[in-house]
Image 1: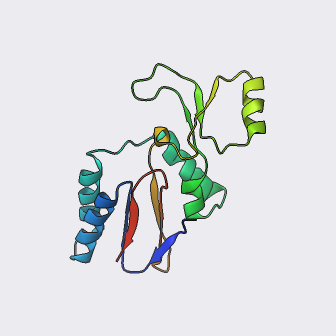
Image 2: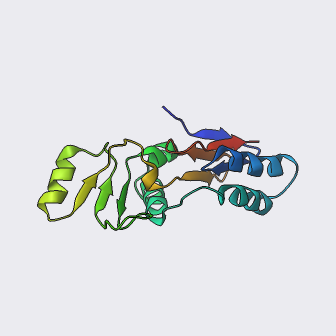
Length: 152
């Protein structure tokens, strides 16, 4: 199981380990958060797919429903609509969703496609950081990617 990483000195999260390391190195060398973000984004832009639905789901799980940050990132994902190079507009679900939920969605008339993978790249990659008022930073990384959370 992956656990939420905690640090006081600074932290960078990215969906690819090299992007996280690039941002962390900027922080470690005295750069600010904006410079670290730019370094990580530049490194991640090369090969990472982002999904707005994923980011919204992770944020809602954490901020609205109080899930642990890592649990919110790791939880099963869904995707409604087309993916890259696909004409399908079905509701795509990772295989970890409860089969009863899948059946209920189908019974309600939804076109549902359960993907073979428990952690599918189709859903994109996510990462999350939360800075608490006391300065502690929580970081979570996506098991669907080879990203890391790198603390200072």
